[in-house]
Amino acid sequence: MTSPVETIQSVQLNKEDELILLDQTLLPNKKVFLHLSTIKEIWDAIYHLKVRGAPAIGIAAAYGIYLETKKSKAVTFTGLYDDFQKNKQYLASSRPTAVNLFWALNRMEERLLKETEKSITEIKNALKEEAEKIRMEDELVCRSIGEHALSLLKPGFGILTHCNAGTIATAKYGTALAPIYLGKEQGYEFKVFADETRPLLQGARLTAWELQEAGVDVTLICDNMASIVMKEGKVQAVLVGCDRVAANGDTANKIGTSGLAILAKHYQIPFYVCAPLSTVDIECDTGDDIPIELRNPDEITKSWYEKPMAPKNVKAYNPAFDVTDHELITGIVTEKGIAYPPYKDSLINLVKQVR
Ligand code: MRU
Figure 1 (spheres, rainbow, N blue to C red):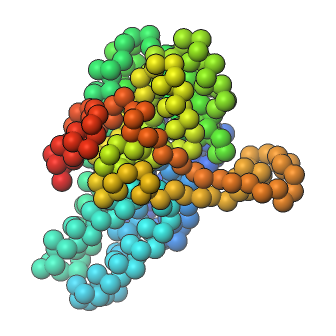
Figure 2: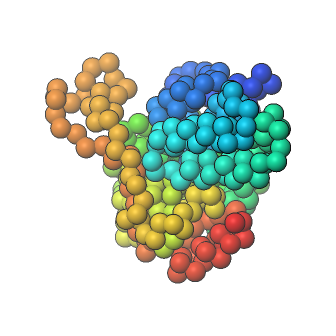
């Protein structure tokens, strides 16, 4: 058995300058790598969750804006910058909640603006270099999150997780799953409970798959089973990833996360959010400022089965994320350390170390 942590890169650029994406919509049944080179294909891959997970979306967007800007016929910096801006706006419209998308595009723009004196070819090369840096840094960041999070856990812990914040959602290791992989290397033998994560089943299709492939003890549960598993004393910590953290610590993550946090509080189980500092959006004062993606109700009524799962034309409501109130979060684990309440102070201190 070869662990996906060591073998799978879900987002990378190949030597031919194509974006190679592991199509996450086909897992766990097929491992298909897409070769993409147009901005339309990359937008579509983000929108349709072929690439998903906040850090992986950011990395894909960085490569996407490089690949499209490379095709620009502009001969002046202003012309190139205009093309870059159009590409940026387009990619930014693919999904609204994960701030890493906007963070990565802004970082690419900052790099472009540092290169104004260079030739058009040199500027294009600089964009490629920056996109590669974003991917490589993410791997180091995730490893560091894993090390900090592991310090909170003991061998044999039962850990509940939601959605997929694993290696395929990032450059490597994942965020919430990083301590599980690092713990495995050190013989911690965690028992992981993976929520299936309706409606798109990231927990069942992706988390259960990647943990099983890595030889981690993983048990799949339906989302509505979290309470009984906690009540039975099987969970000593909840670890989740996230898509955007507001300045006060309110955290947007996959729909269902806030309910888990409420349950964890009831059963007095620590609830940790694992996030790179690129996921912290200090421009959002509170979770109320975080845009929540509404997706096609068909994902609830039709997905995954050949036959409809609900009566034809029934109304369905499909918010893809919810916001967990900061008061329910025990700690936010970042690459620079663990933020504890009051988050307004602790988060800003960590953010200042990287911006
Ligand atoms: O809709 P998705 O699958 O992109 O949602 C992903 C999540 O909610 C993850 O928990 C989050 O992006 C963190 S990934 C390290």
